[in-house]
Image (tube, rainbow, N blue to C red; front, top):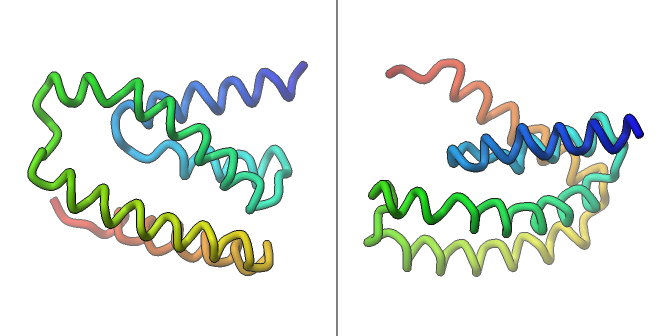
Length: 119
């Protein structure tokens, strides 16, 4: 029962962050790998499925409030589709430990960037 509660709480918190456009899925990955004990590749697959409905729920509000740059949509979506397909293929062939280290390095770089960013 406690596992269900923690998973629901993690989903709720990361759902709020996803609604803000912060990237709650990355935080969900941290929960799933560090606290729920899932393998990195399994957590990434779950994260992809999690992203679809949360993005779909948040997007109408962002469009309504005019905070979507429509000129950037086509190039961003095209590049995102191509790169995500390539990265997904790579992620499914990489050793889980390598994948975990790559994700950890990514989080450190982003964290340091945010920590020392001005303005």
